[in-house]
Amino acid sequence: MGKEEKARFTVRLARPGDMAAIMEIERTAFRPAVRASNERIGLRLALFPRGFWVLEQEGQVAAWVSSLLLSEETLRTLRTLEESEQTLDENLHRPDGRVLYIRSLGVRPASQRQGCGQALINCLLGIARKNGWPLVVLLAEPKNEKYYVEKFGFERTSGYRLFQGGNHAVFEKRMV
Image (tube, rainbow, N blue to C red; front, side, top):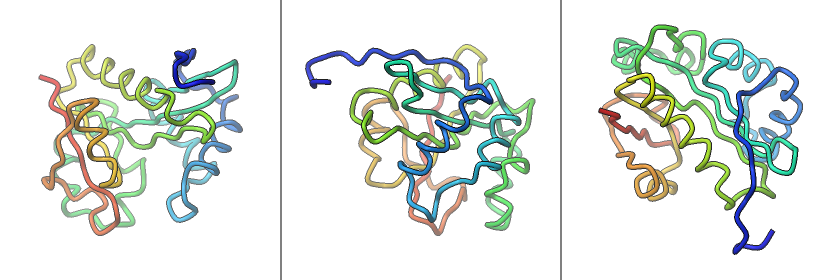
């Protein structure tokens, strides 16, 4: 697809039948050290199915995004949780939470730089707006700061301890 052509895609909720495609993207888009297992991805889908979306391009899953809801209390206590506990989605997700945590975003390498990731982030921001959730947070490599700040209005913050010590920075976007 040429750069001048508009990408044609569909964004929809993920289904269990998408797992093979999601895991292939996980395998090709992430370094082994940060790759999640099939079980971990399946747990995210089970914990918060309305926060797990896929993007189809030419009839195939080309990208996916998972999210969890956090309570403000959970977000505050992340400063004190042990590193191993922070990575466990079941310890983070609160069904009645009001902070949307964009947990993971993967784009098939052949579909990168075509607006796929942007479409998925915009989808989640729209859901946060619609539900009146006041805050969206995510982790990203510092090299991607410009993208999240300029495209979506996120701000880098050091106010939360989410996985500090790794090579990720925390970004937040106030929705109200």
